[in-house]
Length: 247
Image (cartoon, rainbow, N blue to C red; front, side):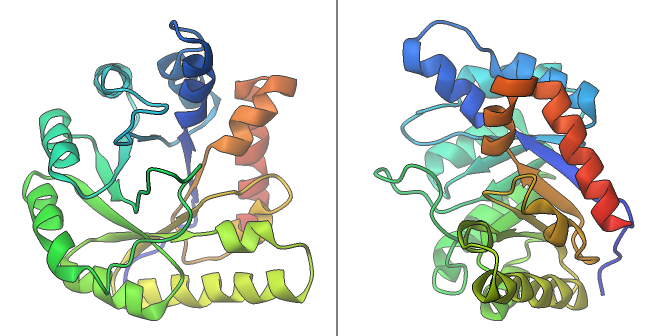
């Protein structure tokens, strides 16, 4: 069984700082500056998704993040030869393999690890051999957890989008229970378990309270909240909400 810490880590995703920058071109706002502010505000790590179409984070952003951060960088990427080459060049602390569709606005669901074992295996092996911690972004399903373990990935990240998208009531309770069961099973089979996608102040508490989760990754909500209160204060409030829920 995987050891679980009482401290729940916060990974801050800076993709959508880059989205705002790219909407007009130029260099402002700078996702690297946002990442440094996040670190000062209490983030335990920074997540950045380098997409095939470079719609937000760029190759240059990854290079600068890797050289300037003093906290771990988690590179989200699809399992392609292009992305593998970039990951092996920069060697971030972690790589989270995610599904990717050109037409989607954001990642719509988890990776089908169970159905793509032979496709994913060489990517996981190459990353692990390079000393990079590999995470699989999956739905809260036992078969996906088991498939991730069989691939040799030490970490899974549960997709929390379904839980966040439904209103308070029986359906949200059902989705939360799925997350709890999956997180407990991950720990049972020796996987470190993370969660993320769509979490905000009104949804983070029950997820943060799941004792077998080690990390939450949150981005879009924090970038949006920063418009009103600033990036640092938004992260401080999220960090506090997570800490209260975990206690």
